[in-house]
Image (cartoon, rainbow, N blue to C red; front, top):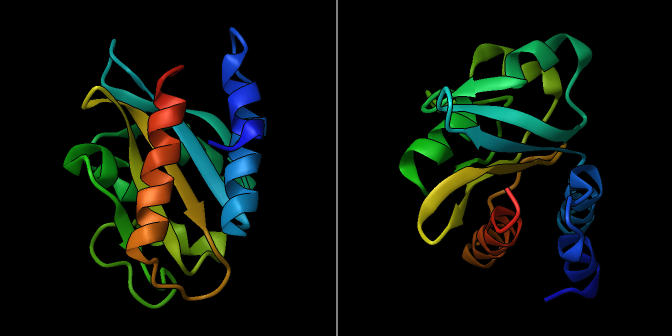
Length: 149
């Protein structure tokens, strides 16, 4: 595992924004979100983000399971990808998601021992079909983050 991730995750309370920034750098992504599942209300609560327009923050601060790309990844417990969010919302993303200017988008569940702890998402400003290796890597990073979620 990457030493930078190891150092972040060894702290009692990880710097979630720094963790997200490492993920975004690895994927050369311009936008990203990290949500934690709140068992009290079963909603995904935003821990860190980059690139989400101010007017969309209220919509991504608390996401129901099954809604949007992150909610779909949480519900399915598997990666959810859109090659070009601007051209095709795929029935998963909401119309307002276009305001991010993101095109290639991938969200994965953060799983600990098979249980949902949150979601991790990255977005690129160009169309992109994520490879199986990229999906597996983001899932791996999601599992690492889930250890502290």
